[in-house]
Image (cartoon, rainbow, N blue to C red; front, side):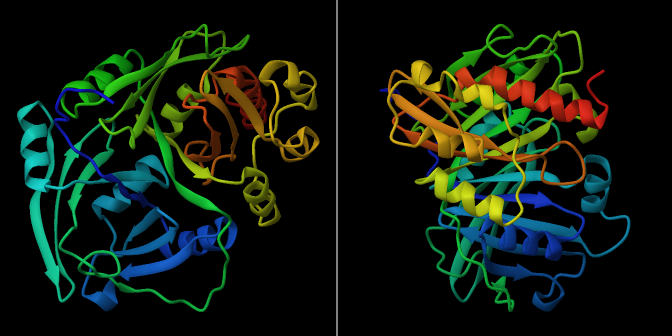
Length: 367
């Protein structure tokens, strides 16, 4: 990628932790509807007294669902303020102490100091820094550990059966920040984390008759971690980012994009299991051939499922977005299949935004 030294080597996304009001029920939801498998548990039975976490996985995607066990808990306060939402994006690093010291020396604010935890399976070193809103990045060094997940957890084997739907790894995660804050946070990723800006969209790229937003995509040295950062832009009505900021009460993770190798199969299964997706009008498919050229998939099948297609210089991609996953119109998932394309579906923004606006209309928030 770049010839210069990568100031923050990252091996990949280790896990994403969500603070949720009922971790056990949330875990069952993801297992039954999205094909995750139960992996690990931490809580009263493992000696924790104030919180519990259920860890679920599918190929390289790991979600940690955490709830408080006592009233007036900091996690409970977070849920009361933001609803069920992403708290931590954990990044696997070769050296936690170096990652922590380096980012702090470049201006990061500490969330948690480097801590070594161990059990009979080895040891792990973790530390954390703050990013936008109340979101944090956890650096995790686990090369000396071969347990189920982390020290403090035990295997979780509930009597529940589910088969995977083909989710492979996290492709990117999008952060929504406040008015005029996008450049502040892209600078943070550039200066503190050593990321590079790979794509930028302005309000001319991402707008409809009513709403607009701006976005910049930041990527780390080896390209494995991609964080688009969105901010609202002036429009006639309240944009999806403004709606998010209102219901989330500030900046946070807007969506998690997960890659699949066969989007038609994945989406068919997800729809059968009850996951709801944003649907674009059938007219979107009328001129799809002219817009994206030859593709391997059957357009009628894509139309039936509501899958969008976009092409860039490298190839094409297929993508679709779920409706919000919880009670508040905040966090959702994107399912993406890349066939060479390295971009983010710019050609679909307008159709997608109009679909989101129709949902906002139903919620009464497009004012």
